[in-house]
Amino acid sequence: MAELTPYSYQSGNTALHRLGAGVKLLLLCALSVTAFFAGFPGLILTSAVVITASLIGKIPIPSLFSGSKALAVTTLVVVALRAVTTKSDPSFSIRIDEKGCVEGLLFAWGVFASFALGSVLFATTTTAELRFALSRLEKKTKHGLRAILPVGITKKIDSFDLSLTIALALAFIPRVFSIWEAAEYAYRARSGKMGILGTAKLIPLVAERLIEAAAETAHAMVSRGYENGTPVSLD
Image (cartoon, rainbow, N blue to C red; front, side):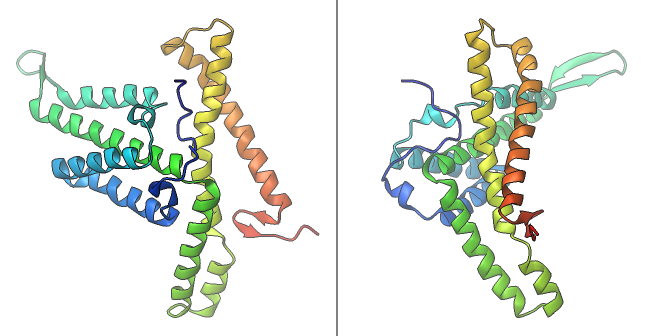
């Protein structure tokens, strides 16, 4: 089976696909915090949720970690830095700090658990669903603020479409993986070999394409009457 594009939507009609986007987004935030700050029990809980979600959503577990190679390298470096200590008195020496090693491994576990949770969210939720859920949450929040804040402040808050800003930021995450995947396929098609050198070659190309994509989105928003998150006049 071909490798799935990281953080891409996988159509389906499972219970997880039908679950509200707002609920899934809140669960993602809560479980990510749990994975990093609740210790070993929190990691067990988060991992159990990931496995259960993959079964309910019919998403192969390996595909949840698709596109995480760069993250794995970075995390491995962090673990190594936490695990290795040096001593210069009376003579320079390098030793393994068992406590630091365990802490580093738990950190890596939390990183990959959070990455998998993000994969579950984007695999079962469309951008439109996320936008609608965020919009509803923003409306309820603004309604509550109107009761406690001065009118002048609430008018400024009402003029800013925060839900749209967040939705665009979330929607851009899958585009990062999609653009990287397209660049990598093109590089391989020209007999390029991936690795540290190949990755280094792709980074500036992908960065340039991401800037172009962001600019295209910005122009599209301005043409629809938005600038910096607020409606503007096109006259």
